[in-house]
Amino acid sequence: MDTNFIHEDEIDFKAVMRTPKRQIGLFLILLIAAIEVAGWFYLNNMSVAYLKTTIDLPEPINTFERAVDTKAGTFVEGIDLKKYYQPNDSMINKGKELFLATCASCHNQNGDGNGQVGVALNPKPRNFISAEGWKFGRNFADIFKTLKQGSPGTAMASFDAIPLPDRMALIYFIQTFAKDFPKPTVDDFTALDGTYNLSKGGMSPNNVTLETAEQKIIDENKVNNEKLAALIKTSEDNCCAPPLKKVIRCKEKAYGALLNSNAWVGSTDNFVKFLQNTISTNGFKPTILTLSSQELTTYYNYFLTLKKS
Image: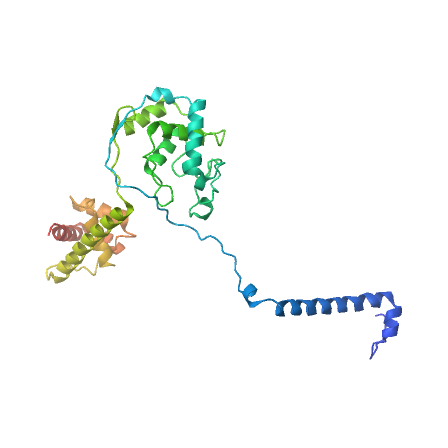
């Protein structure tokens, strides 16, 4: 214990000023008090408008619509695939031109997926520089398939309308973003030709406006909903039906699954396999799979009769 410590009831400020160590303590107290006063003054003089100001960040874009005009399909001539076994400067330059005009807004000019539109998309556009995360693969044939079919669940629409030679050039340019892209082989082109008849040509698909496509989906869903409602009502009115509450967890899901699929039609075995493969979503109770063969056949015949009615 420090025997030299003297307790003071009052602070002797003259003594404080004569003692450097005590001056530092006093200075810190005064500094903290000054900061608090300055903070209070600053907050009380901020305008209400400033306090309410927020930073507007772009919201993630989960859907992406690309305008399409109504156009009937036309015959597209085939190409000589041998000309595309190896890229040349002309192809690369054409591919770059197409990429900057069509792809860079999402994938960025350097291919890293951080274009002006791409930064707000969810999921983000493909990063062509990285070898990781490619959903459909990154060899020549894989990229061709993605361009042709698009990537469901993302903003990547089909670019099948781009002429075949231009698509080939575009893929070769995309592969300049990284040195480790797999080199296309003759077998790759042969496989592409076998799948898409590139050398023979064929009819391009019809195009319809987004409004027309959306209305068609609405009409189809309306018909399906009417069929589903009628199926449920028929089942509920059938006094000879087997005990349905025993096997059905959600009647809308169960009857909808049976109505929208034919995979279970044909035999009791098909019915059981269908239930096994879709049990988490088909609206049936898992306990249906524990029934005897005779009980399962009874349910299969009943549901088949409903489906055909």
